[in-house]
Length: 229
Image 1 (tube, helix red, strand yellow):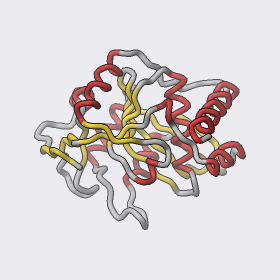
Image 2 (cartoon, helix red, strand yellow):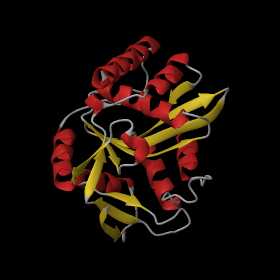
Image 3 (cartoon, helix red, strand yellow):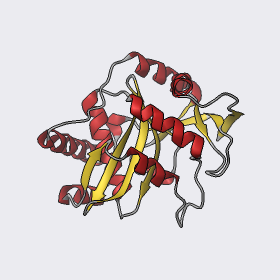
Image 4 (tube, helix red, strand yellow):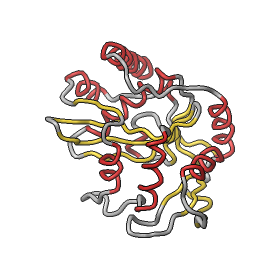
């Protein structure tokens, strides 16, 4: 449920975006063709507790088979374009040209990152979000192949845990995200968690050895099994 949606009257600059995230609000457009952008302040917030991340068994099998290649920050523009596309189950999106421009600028400044899923040399899925202090704000994801966006989420969570992040903000909760452990919390509680996360230092690793990533993924799987046993 959205408590407030206020029209953005200033130019959507990277500096303004960072201030907004630090204050607990974020921008959305009514549609990708709408030139207007609104600040959104949800009454309740979706978050994914990193220590309670759940990986479905079927997805574990997919990740272990490794049909995909995972890259980081190599095709951000393609990822945000994929997230802005309309699909058969999603006729419109909230990502308009103003949002694309502002987040691309933030990406070049090092605050926005993409997790990319490749298959046979083609980008088939991914996600992007904003990293600020010890908080990561997941913005959107897309998939052109079965499980691609889900695999991207697994690799994101592993990277956030490795980098010492405290908060993964999903903004809203969907049935799809609930499967992974996403919960709703009151806005006031979210702001307290956000303040704590912003005070901490975390690192969004761009380059890590394959063995380190594999070990981190297996640790996520063990965590998930412990929670369901």
